[in-house]
Image (cartoon, rainbow, N blue to C red; front, side, top):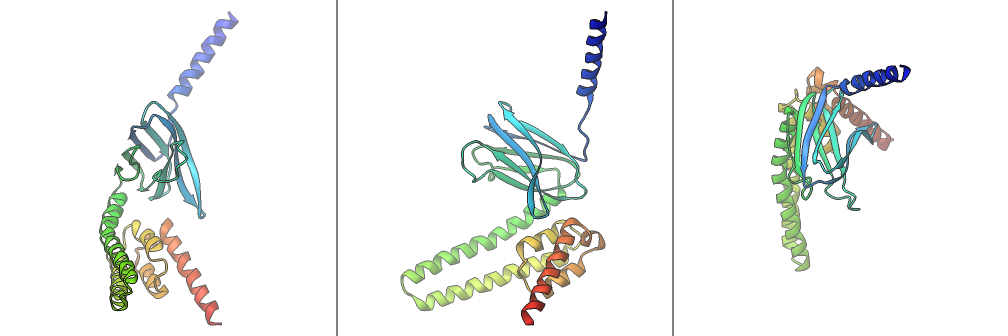
Length: 241
């Protein structure tokens, strides 16, 4: 009789355990075509350190799902340990926001084949990156031309190319700063500034920060931009002493 009661108690506990859902305001689900074995890690940066929020072992099924809680939109990372002793092409970054997001990619081209949906912030960031790629591609082409000119000892051409590179670099900075001024209500804006133009003139950075809406200025990356400006000012003050 006691044995039967024990079985009943175990069955009830098992039902409760199976019925318990992981709570959170963000669900990230997806599929990695071609993945049969590996470990996925959901990560984020906290106090300048990359930490793991959650992880799961993939064994046969390429589908995955994470549920977590974020206080506000922020950049998260999906790291795949493929057991191939190759650190390249194994981490995705995406601008997460509360809700449901999907990530679909392939094992062979983990970073290049990725498609991410469910986040307006991520969509905006991808559009920005696509435009920036045009600047980066042109600058890379100019660098190659400069190296070729150096091999040929063509001093005049080297100087011309260096001037073009300098002008392109300035155009790139102007575009980013203009983007910041015209998108001062987006969470991605202070993130872009702290990652793309952290070395820009501190006066420009300070002006951008002051133009942010109160909500964005008080966001995770708004606070990081404020701290960056503070440190840059302190460094410049110390250099003048």
